[in-house]
Image 1 (cartoon, one colour):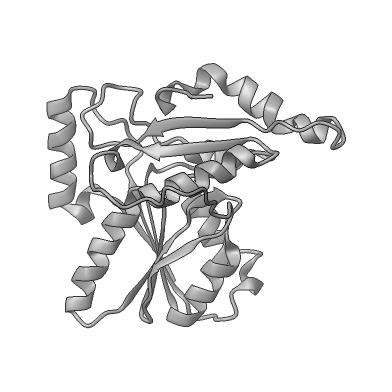
Image 2: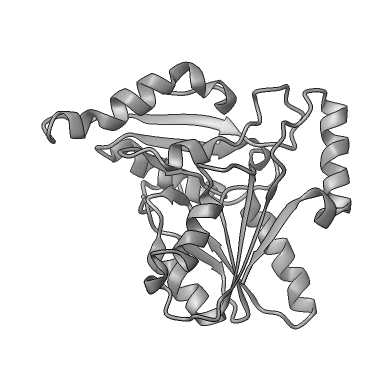
Length: 254
């Protein structure tokens, strides 16, 4: 099934969160809900209000629901096939900016990519950049700039935010000693993947992170709505790009 734009998901919230996501638990494993829900989302493409909302954090915390967010065409095909064949409900989110940003060869044969397994798209030893969706390409561009300054950044494409590939994250950050988590989603008090990852490294789960000297940093958008007029929206995004530190919510945790 498809929700044409993710900002309208609240119309189906009860059906997704309270019904299909709980069916296996409610039936004691007797019944499954092999439902794949596709929906486009994401800013920077001149859409009206409610079309660009980044709401993945609300579903990241939903038990019984898998959340997949591909960053490229090849992964999109493999992950979509895996989602369709999965016995549990899968929310498959596609960032609209990726539709026309670039092209990539995609195998014609039938293949799958494991849900819950991250991909290290660039290896490095100085800092781990943890991200997903459209921010993967942004992070790779940042890594290219860092390389010119002698800094080797490792970029991790999560591919799926639920389940989360904790092992790949921990192994990378243990190697580099520095973690930068990047997402386009707005600042939230709850339902933030950033918050969950930082808790993984600093909170009660810190025993998974053997190093005690890890430097952590997170980059996310302000807690606001992008304006619905395309001209205003693009001007705002250009302003944010030109004044990164003053317009993005950037927090360090040491």
